[in-house]
Image (tube, rainbow, N blue to C red; front, side):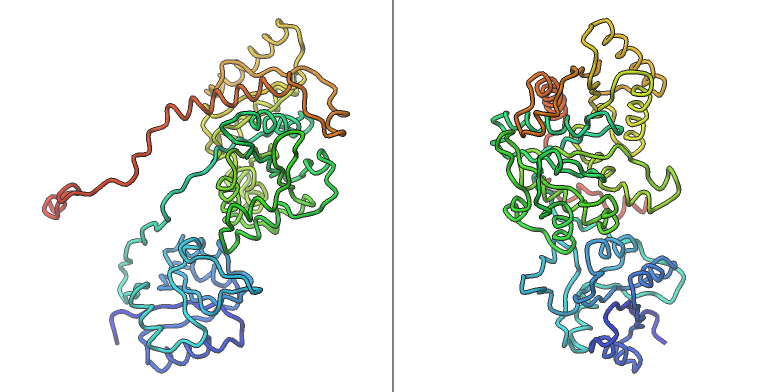
Length: 435
């Protein structure tokens, strides 16, 4: 008996020819490997989480479940993914392997020598002993430029969606962004289509996420899924058609879609649902996946704008939203507080600011600005209905605060020096580690 052999998982349609071929080669000992057939992603997940080490997952490219989330699942268990078959779907070229982080691919009619060559270059044999080798190192591709991301969230009825429109409109006037500002509706109950009188049902967020499941569309392709709002100076990405559609969006595809938006525009403003509950809060992975749009965008945002309204209930909800953001992992210095429909009297505004600061201080939180941004009560329904530009008293204060905090964070961020040359001896020596 050999001391080591490859343990392979396979995911393919039941009648895939290569599925049976690999099983025959391993059963006849033509290849020192063990092949485990899986009929579903759930079975793959169960095998990976069983505690047993696997050398690779061989997945047929025609399987609908083959996407970024399946690849990310395998990476969590240090299991490389090998794609079998033609990745051209519907006549379009398949995604780049480096983007999907797939280890290798094989044609559908591969032979034993092809399989052995892939195993030798990309997979690790499993020892018959009890000692497990270390996890594979992260092979994330090099970083690339991404536009700043500003999120706007708040409890229901605070006017967060309107403030998101105001932020996008104000940023579009900044010449640094060259008219390439996007308002992305990432809320679970998307209202931006209604605010912009959009009768078109697509494309929108669902099509964008689906395009990023197994690929990385070019910036022009991403921009084609949005439409211009010339009277307000920005582009708009329509949101979910129904609140229940979140279940069709997978987490890793969502992350890739948001990154794609940040590659295609100079500034992205995201309208979020103010619900950031995760698995650690309620013990349910379904709740975390439902809120993944808001959680992921907020965590990666340059600035998070939290909208509230004055009053006892409004201040309580505002503090709750800020605490939820910090539990996700958002730094308090990236949070801007906006009090919408704030009273005009300076004394009343000062009292609201002191009450908010007192409550936040009780939780040890200190947000980016010393006081909230106060926005006056304005009748905006007719302006929004007619698609007219939003009034300056609504646009300028919050836009000025966003630019102030974004520029401050950019100045304090460490400079990107790029790759560092490794000189002989700079990483230490074997002798030093032994000592």
